[in-house]
Amino acid sequence: MTPDPFMLMLSRVRFGLTIGFHYIFVPLTIGLIVAVALMDTLRVVTGRHDWRRAGRFWYRFFVLAWLIGMATGYPLRMQLEHQWSGYSVHAREVIHAIMGMEGMIAPAMVSLVLVLASLAHGQPALDRAITRWVLAIVMLVQAACIVTLNAWMQHPVGTEAGNAGLEIVSLSAIFLSPTALCKIAHTLSAGLLTGAIFIAAISSFYLIRKRHFDVARLSLSLALPMAALSLAAVIWSGHASARLVMQQQPMKFAAIEAHWEQEAGPSSLTLFAVPDLAAQANRFAVTVPRLMSWLATHSDASPAGVRELLVGAEARIASALRDPATEAGTGWRQLYARTAQTREDWPRLSDEQRIHATALASVPSVPTLFGSFRLMAGCALVLGLVLACALWHRRALQRGGAQWPLRVLCLCLPLPWLASFAGWTVAEVGRQPWVIYEQMATGSAAVLPPPAAGILELLTFLAAYSVLAVLFITVTRALLRIGPRRHIWSSAWRYKVRSMIGNPLQRRTAAAARASAWVGKPTRPRHMHRVATT
Image (tube, rainbow, N blue to C red):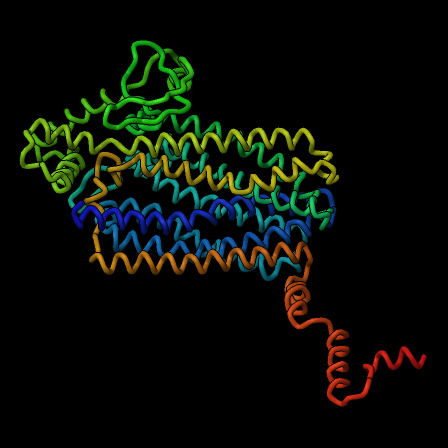
């Protein structure tokens, strides 16, 4: 491997680390703020103060996740501007239009978070509920803007090539494209699911330990139906997104399903297999007849396979090379040049072989996509079964009687994050080797630093994110130990500081014992003397 491909991979790993660590907190904040808004609304409707206590408790976790998420969001912008400046310059107008909206929303979000964190105790219940909903809507709109930019990179619409890069023809086409709408619905519903499972898992933990029973019972009664509805939305929007991928990114869809060749009749769905890239076949495949055609096309038609799509890619590459002036073939020419840099046997290849090698470079990693998609679907299936069982036993769960469903809910805590990371792996790895699908190759978007600087920056990010991870875990444990008490700082003092310095009565007794040993005669503490004389 030449140093240039190595540094490109290093830049991708660094960006993946940055955005991956940032995304740990994004769905949690979205789900928690909606749940807290619902709790404050129920406080107004029912008049029960326990809903207020529950909302205040979960808002603490929201603030913690939001602060770390905000701190980890700025390195993403910095990396886009410096390390991926080829993409930033080429798509400057689109990025400024979409991220400009997100930038205008950010100050309002910061103000609302600070107001609710500092003045929520003095607000009337109705005003507090309205403010929570405003904050939730602002966060959902901000997330929708960011997801829209990613959807445009997957399916670039509403733009055309200009003298200084891409120019916007229709901003509404970008925001209202089917890809953007499905991706927004899928991402936001996954965030709601993450927050609901987080609340359900911690509430189950409290019920198992017989602590904070009232708040845990109410929180669980809200989290379970919220998680079930969110999971249904995730499955529906995911199915719609998969059908759009089949139409707009057929090579990605074929790689996800390890579908190598179009069949004459309905295609089978491969549940498990070991994809063989060299032979373009599946080993040890377990299939369900006709299921893939029914899910993908709602008919008996078979989608195109990798082999048929390679033939189409070769035709587009040849057309782009014949007419170098066409803007439509810019991405394919970039991929052709990139493949020439990475293939050591390039000078010995014929023109047809070079075109075929470039077409092969347009195929994403089939094993990665195949495994990630099934991991995501498996997590959704497990969550569906657990939530169905929990809702069936919900009355026993709220009384703390059924212990095994509570323990299973605690074990399900990492599944939403695992499914989300697997889904984003499918989306981003499946787009490769393009940063803008079939318009700009990933290698042409990066500005690679020197090897020493790139490795040093990666190690710096690893160290910084390790510190933030330890901080998040430590504060989360402290919040769990304190529970839904109103005065968080006095509770932290009582549970943390006093455990370190000990009880005052024990200190006086120990001091008297030390004095007795020093003087050589028995003495008793003052409080023990008073007890003896009385």
